[in-house]
Length: 225
Image (cartoon, rainbow, N blue to C red; front, side, top):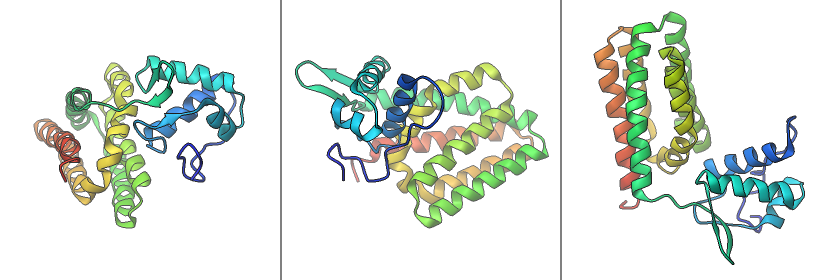
């Protein structure tokens, strides 16, 4: 383990083009979202800069931006810490996610063609394999890709933009319960694909609503197990 608590190999390389401050921001946000940097963890500018191979300035700017967006808490005389979401914060966001995803499922059932159904089936198969392999990071990525595809098939640009605003936080909340949700989550995904394929808007809405509510409930129960 590195001194900031990062697993070996977890630090992304900043090789993509674009402003350095943006790349550092994206790298830190990804580390937080995947919980390589865990809620409550102390973030030391000099150490993060060393791990990322940059100076402290872009790290400081990234932390200030992450603070503004609610990912990081800047505490006087203590420094920066990964934000620890309250149960109320999680509940509010996951409730909004349910509303957005349920409407996306309805629209997908109305609009999706055979290629879209096939794409969902392929993504579901990847998720099922990741569960079987016990690869939590792959499960989280496959889950995000599946839901993004449903949103794409809905064909509503405004809905997709709104969903995009909460997607990163949904991944953040889903990661600690991905293993617990396990196979059942993908059984629910299969049921959703069937409803979309049947062009049953009402059933697709109900399946997605129940699916996202299960995730919300599991998140709140995680500390009780």
